[in-house]
Image (cartoon, rainbow, N blue to C red; front, side, top):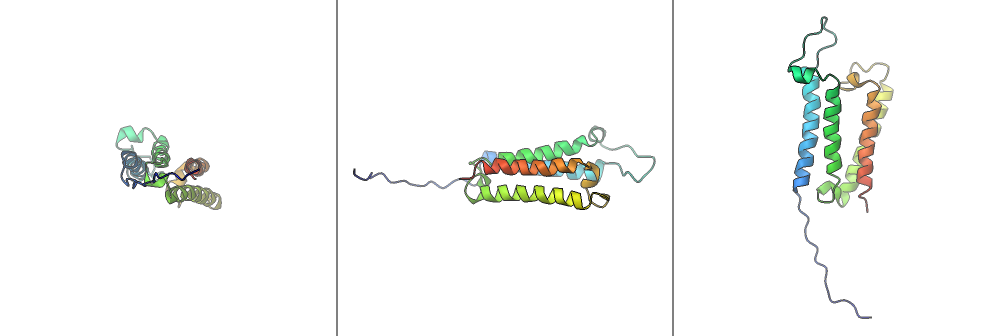
Length: 150
């Protein structure tokens, strides 16, 4: 059996793809939503009577704002696990997978260590037991990266 004379030419992968830009925008939008709600909109629970939140549309959502923010963040991370993005191929998969696993583990451990008094931890103080869901969601996104690992 003779060797094939065909040669394999590796084409360089594009760093910026449409999918990667969309995933970055979703990640930034999720983080910005959480920060904007926590810093600007969320009423201060120590002030009585509680003032009205502005803008009203975001203030009326209450803790659903965290679901929107973390949902955008997790969706962006999941989209970035696609092979057409830098995090979806090669070493990026390992970095994304281990990063998400570690962030989820640190989030859950921090919640358990400080669960008696969460008042000094921003965002965690509003979420309560839902902090476990956030940590598990980060780990679930880590598994989406794990499915791409070769």
